Amino acid sequence: MGKVLVAFDESEQLILKSIYYDEDPEEALSFVLNHIIPKVKKDLSCLSGTLLGQKG
Image: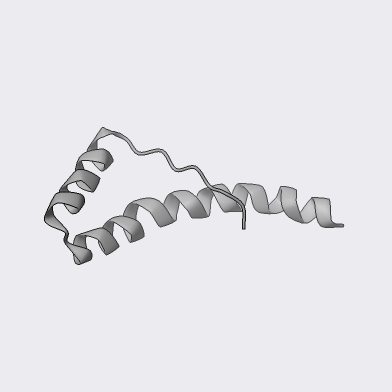
């Protein structure tokens, strides 16, 4: 799989800092599920048509 770049706004960066300092695995999982996965899925769905079109 290729590389994916995910940008975080200021509030998301603060959440990440909190997760880092608190070392809270539940908060980290919640962040991944609620902030990262939706962004990655959006990027991949946009690319999927392009990538599929190149294979054929």
